[in-house]
Length: 418
Image 1 (cartoon, rainbow, N blue to C red):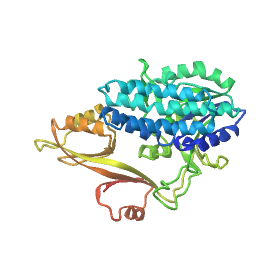
Image 2 (image 1 turned 45 degrees about the vertical axis):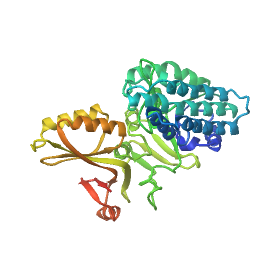
Image 3 (image 1 turned 90 degrees about the horizontal axis):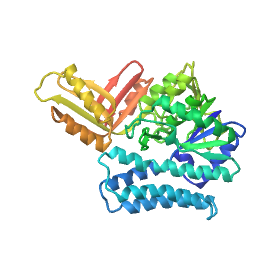
Image 4 (image 1 turned 120 degrees about the vertical axis):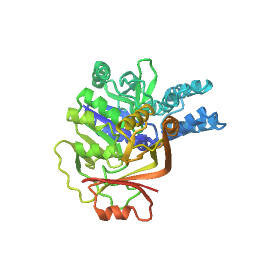
């Protein structure tokens, strides 16, 4: 039994969906569960829509129309006008109509999840319909009835026992009848609200199903030939890894490598299921395999960029030393506001942290910290992480940049730059 994950780039247009079906056709005869992300940049567009709704912007409806038109343009190329997929997609978009008719919920993250999740629900309707049209019998499944989470919106925590029981109750029987198509990134609460698992969380969804079902492997289909040592959009002469250990993959994702969601590896490692990262434009190429017992030799450093970073310095108002008790309070406020620390550094009078900017969370965090501490920050920064670095590579990466923070260990260096 195989699990495939197709990301947004692989289904960004009609040609991509036709290609997806051709890739799937190569694996006829296998039991196959397919996890699909939102199409193209739909998640970004739905995030923009969510903000416009909460801020009561005048362009709310024009943003929504643009999103709908993008999807309808794709299905018009794939299906006859009478095909039921048109009604399925329209009925899914109606859920957003119902939301934006009412006043926004007090919790921005709750509103975010209810709106942004529509991207995956629509994309899977279209993919499932096209697979059936192409003669590949498949069934559409709502993942929210299977991946059960708590009520932590935008970062849903999977309730594994409940999730495993639900998946094993229904999915094996469906797989015996044909392909199963479901959504990545989403979960459901006990109150039947939608949660999301964090940006790029479709990889994690695939690993959840694989671990619960005892899959032979998970393949995530990308627009790159495998896992590279750096993002080819920013760096030339990248090299591809033929294979990586689970440990190295976890380290890379922890530091922000975007090719895999950080939570993806652990369920696979626990179940000893290999993860393949392959190109959807060249499906016969070997890609990269992540598995046990791999010893990597690093010819070049692994370079990971995280942009839109904040560097925040926190100091006691009375000029006292930063104590363990104060750090406990600070970390409590970070956890309460769901802000994850990427780098941290302590001096006698201040505690400095670097993290991703989520405006709503950052605003609440600043308000909370300002009660007992002095805070100052820089934003619009970049965090550069080098694994297995050389000093020559580090020097080259910092040319013409202002370094605001630097940390070195035996294998890894992290620098925050402007």
